Length: 170
Image (tube, rainbow, N blue to C red):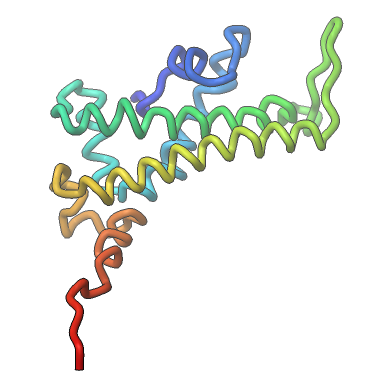
């Protein structure tokens, strides 16, 4: 199953280079989608979109949601996670850092700087996705369905209009 983003999409749209082994980054796509995008969409809507995406049966509004909002969020979150995962890999002798001919492993502070830099981009796209859903909730009946109970964004839809815009003078 494809979790909205392919290896090719990651390598074309993030700073992950072509020489990164797909086996090292593919698991990061699923966890990035599950941990971040699923909480924004809600499990019910997430599963619905994922099923339709893999079956290639998305409607035009869902295509826009996936292509313009979900894919960048998943890709940049996976890219940020790759910084840590590729810098420090768990091997049979414990956590190891990679070192090859004519390369050196960066200091931990450089790894963390890069992680946070990518995580900031991921957060930008996640916030953008959330706001798009809030602003366009009427386009996605599965999102607003009563069955979609655990969406962070849906919860903000109902609280977004708490103030009465009528002015009353007493």
